[in-house]
Length: 125
Image (cartoon, rainbow, N blue to C red; front, side, top):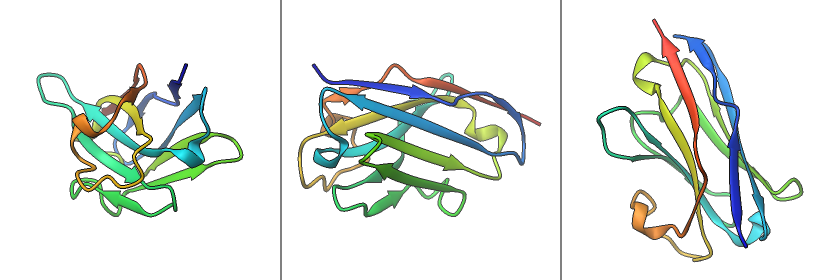
């Protein structure tokens, strides 16, 4: 059974930083295309960042330059380093994964078969 467990969510002031983690169990992250999504209150779930099996990353335009997605296969953990946080970044952040080796539509929630329960990020002005 594959499980994804996020952690690291917190309440911070605008301009601050957070690092989110997502630890996988039941499968090695080296076999996974992984991504971060988020859902703000009243909004649809949206893609934040994705990382393929080779470590190549993709970012949503709204976060590009402020976040870094990385994966430590030895620790079986996905990370999202977020800097210069803005109030608009407040959301529940979800980790997602798939065993597909090619994910052309990385922003599409339907590409992923494994999801974590989410971790909440609150950014105050």
